[in-house]
Image (cartoon, rainbow, N blue to C red; front, side):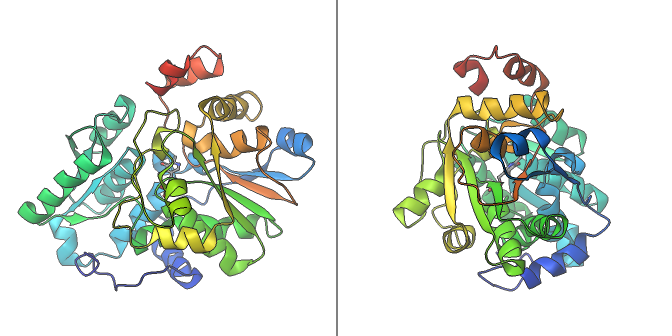
Length: 338
Ligand SMILES: *Cc1c(COP(=O)(O)O)cnc(C)c1O
């Protein structure tokens, strides 16, 4: 697969790879602002900075990895087109990046993906296939399209060019907050956390990097605890972008997260809802559940702080009716997860 994607087999991503990625995607992604949160700084007694990555084009950081992976393809591969399974934001990013290159993109997803995310991908001109009830079912369709139509798979996280692209966020953070003691990163498959941790620790080895996930179906946490990639039941959650497994044959992000992350913290659905509500009410920012977990973790008192702390607000692609109900405190646990 790596050869097919035009990439050397290289089972870790370093700050050098991330610097190269940054050059490759310059002009294709935004450098997002990093601002002080007065309310969270006051509340915690430490400087809290918000990396506003939900303002990224396509509404999430995934455009960084997708743009880097597409830029690294050979012309012959570009002419075949790309395919991926996605819970939404990766598909959207890939569709956007492929369109800029005039390439074909096919996005496969499960029935759990919210309708707003699906429509956005269709509008970007990608071919959307809905298959089965899990990320794994969608992945089978990807494999069929690779075999039968010669499409190039660009997975959402477990790929060196994707990890390196996401890592560019870590380089920006260390330029914007050079004295960061701790960076809080939402984690699902671990592409973002692996890339950000490699960049942050490559520049500042003593800065702590903490992954934050939802308690409902946290595949990376379960895998780190087990010492190997394991399956978890996929459950509906307010942080829907954090759903899905890490792949039993995970090649890159599991080892990187095991080696580089200082800790992984899990949140209840109510703690995630509190993060969304705080982002809106205090920071005037609309963030999706996955993007609000850093705020949720601070509000829940689950992070031991030792100095300036940076939270990555990773995405904004939430259904606005759900957002309204969460902000008003109307959404029941069942509704929130629907
Ligand atoms: C994909 C995604 C994540 C998790 O990224 P991984 O690389 O899978 O760990 C977090 N937040 C948002 C908004 C996402 O789209």
